[in-house]
Length: 426
Image 1 (tube, rainbow, N blue to C red):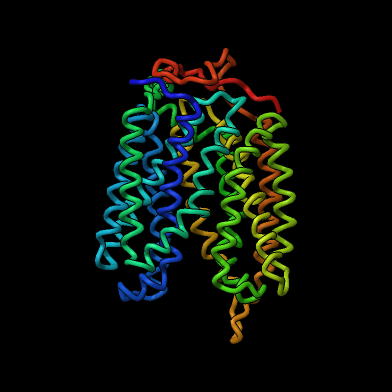
Image 2 (tube, rainbow, N blue to C red):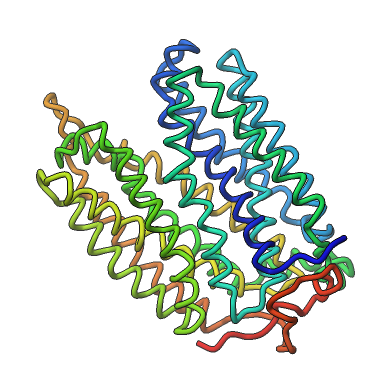
C-alpha cells in the first residue's frame, strides 16, 4: 500500500463527511416533491428525516462495546460501502415504505462511518494539529451546504427527486475506491483493546470524564439545533426574507466556513481549544439573540447575520470536537466516538421537535415564541461552557511520545498506537 500524506488523508475523510452530510441534508428541501410523488403527508415525511438520526443513534449504542476490536480502516470501508448501497437504495425506492427502510440503513451506516472518521483523526493526527485536522474535515459540511444541496435541488427540479441520490451514490462509490486503495491500516489501538474488550468498555462507562464529554457533545448539539429546524421559516415569515433567497443564506454560510473552519482549527491548536471555543460561543450567542429577536430586515442584513451564524455557531464544533477526542485513550476511542455519535443523534432528534412544542403560527403566517428558542440555545451554550471546562481539566490520554512526521503517514506509522498521544496544554 502506498504512503498517504496527512493532508491527503484528511481530504479523503472530508470527502466521506461531505457525502454523509449531503445525504442527510438533501432530503429536507425535497419535501414538497416527495410528498407529492409518494403521496405522503407532513407526518410521514417527518419520519423520513427522523429515522435517519434515530437509527444512527441506536446502532451507535449497540456497536459501541465491540467497535474497538477492529482495524478502523476495515470498519470504515465496511460502513461506507453499506452507506453507498443504502443511498443507492433511496434512489431506487418507489414507495414510502421502501424509502423509509433505505433512510434507516443510510443512518445506520452513515453514523458508523462518521464515528470511524473521528476515531481515525484521534488516532492518527497528533494532538498539536488535531483541531486543525478536524477543521479541514468539517469543510465537507460547508461544501455540502454551499454546493451539494443547491446542485442536488436543481437536479431534482429539472429531472426527478431520485437523481440526487443516484449521483451521490456514484460519488460515494468513487470515494470508497480511493479509500480502499489509499487508506492505511489504523489498528494501534488494538494492543490494549483486544486484551479485554468487555473490561475496556466497562471502564469507559465508569469514566466520569467520558460521561462529561458525552454530555458536552449532546449539549453542544442541543444548543445549535434549538433554532435550526424553524430558522428558515422564521426568516421568511418574521424577518421578511424572500423565500427564493434562502439558498443564498446556505451558499454564503457554506462558502465562508470553507475558509473559516480550517482557520478556527489552527487558532484552537495554537491558542488553546477551550479558549477559542469560549470565544466562538460568546459571539454565537450574540448572533443567535439578534436573529431570534429581530423584526423585518433588508436582505443584505439577513445574509450577513446568516453568515455570522454559520461561521461562529457551526465553527464552535471544530474546537469542541477536538476536545472530545481527548477525553479517552486510543484503546477506547472508537467506542467513545460511537457513543458520542449516539448522544449527538439523540440530541438532534429531541431538539428537532422542541420548536413544535413552543412555537405557534398565527393566521398571518408569522411564528410566535421563536425568541424563546433563542434563549434556550443561549442557555444550552452557557451550560456547554461549564461542561467544556471540566473536560479540559480532566483530559485523559496516553503518555507523551515523539510524534511521527507531519507530512507523511505510512502504513507503519498508522500502526503506532501512540502516534497521537501527546497531551495538550490547557
